Image (cartoon, rainbow over all chains, first blue to last red):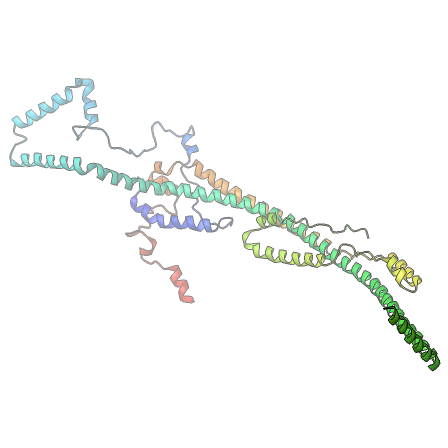
Length: 263
Length: 174
């Protein structure tokens, strides 16, 4: 299947492709991972010309095959069943061992017992450390698999994001109408401002003239008034003679006496 | 000239702000600033000049004929509305912008088609876990292992013989 080395060499570039593509979305020159046209296609796989019966697609087994007694493949037992029934393989095994021992093909010297001891130790090792080791290895496998899964999901995500961004950019581009409405309004605002300025200029010109006239009239009236008062006072003063003054003083004294008698 | 008089601002700045691409927001802010300057200038003047109290003037001014003459003149003056020379320019600009928008949308749709075609390829491709190494090479010749160009451990570009650090080479020029 896929070589671990191949993956290691490819991944730095793949992550780069992901980041570059995100940075450049919306641009026609986006650097992204594009499958070559020779990619294995599902459609081709389902086409009637594809002979999946004789040439099935190789599938990686996720789990090892089944075993009996920890090391004898299930298939060996299945091979015996049609000929001998279910006890056949065990009888065959026992018979074979008996034959090997009796003919001394397999000799029980000290190495044989060492082998038995090794088998025991290996069994205990598997029982003690096996599950943890299995989890660790499975996690490693999953990590490797995820790198490939991400290859696809990242590419799809980038493409979908690009499409979304393009649509958003289109929507924003269509918003130009609002901008031109605003521009037209600006023109109208400036025209109106100029118009109002002119109106006010006319108003002020008329108003200033009227106010000037009004103020002029007021000042003239005030001067006339003042002059009139002065003239009357001076005329009255001129008409007062010494006899008239004396007479008026006597009259005043007389008035005072009358007032004193009344008190 | 029967010009529609300006009454009320109809620009929705929030909507406009939302539709402007983020790299042009400063331009929009400048534009808005300018618009508001125009608006302030407009609001400095009343819509119609205040009424002149002609009766008061006629009573207090010694020459009522002068007031009547002024009144008659004031009422006969018709303030011309300034000619609009710029809306046509704006319309031309708008037409130009519309053309470029249409072109942009067309290009954008083309790009979307490209992306969708690529999506369809990814969709049609058998899952990467099911591929053999030959399949992977067919699909991604640019990243699959290439027996013609073997690499040495740890198979990173930096560790290969003849590798030139592009960034470092660029830095040397500065």
